[in-house]
Length: 443
Image 1 (cartoon, rainbow, N blue to C red):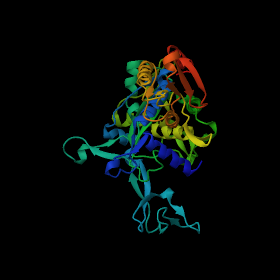
Image 2: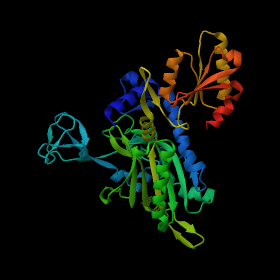
Image 3: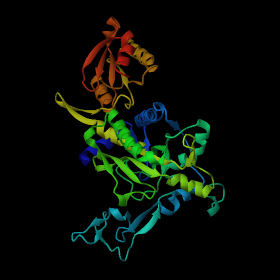
């Protein structure tokens, strides 16, 4: 993949209303993005697809929506206050700050160079400083140390502190999981690559509680399940790979971790991580809170802290990956059409209803009536703001699966033309058969 593709995707997202720069009329805010009319539908569809697979289709899963603001002791127990840091280096020449691992090696392969201005950075005289990535805020009217709290850097801890609540209210037995989708915040120093790394982002996380002796088996199961989810939604297999973490790069809480990586235009990067977190989190919260968070296995008459398998993915990264993966350009006659070949469950609109002649009042009235009827069953968009050729290209670009065209002949034979996004083939379908036609297409 190339950076040219990334530029095309970013342009499409802005032009067609998927993603806008945040606070744009004020000059923007670094690494801040707003999801537009098309983007919010795509994002919503993706989260629904994840929730259906993770919760609704499983008998061993519960859902949760925990608070963004939580007791500060939670982050002390999890290790975020002490250990959630990056080593940062200041370039004295351009006055910018970088993570140590982002510095470039110089030609001699021994010294480090600033990736922005190219000046040599002497790490002996300018050693890295640790910087906490949590965003701090205050609760209450007085901004003092007693009022300090944090915007959560992950959704996982909200699940851990509700472990007993879920067991006691839902009477769950191991193995079982708790799923959550929600906002998280990290004060990234070097965000970038469009929506790939941002300070405000949304996570899709599962904490799956198992007996310690079963953790390795479930760890492998969840790697396969999560990889299959992306493939089932149409992501190209050649653009996905698994990368197991080496021991030296594992997080302090993890026994093992595997990333599902996607081949973005800027290179292979993490899409989702599946980790064996052991019993670290429950043990820490039990110690600091003084609460007994052990699980009692009645069959074995045994009490213990479960191990946790955590599949954790980013909503924003997944949206970006699916858009990149679906984007294609095709030669059509003497021109080129852009197609966003999104899976039918992800496409913002499933059907577009288009009048062939927008000045023909009877054609327009019938098209609007068809649009109204189909809206009760499908996600439909009516559009009469351009010629039919331009309308087709516009719907191709935003991923609409089918276009229903109403023409003067429709007034005579009560049939419309249905055009397929991917093949561009057309069917003549009676109006009364449209609902059945689209249901048979899997919409």
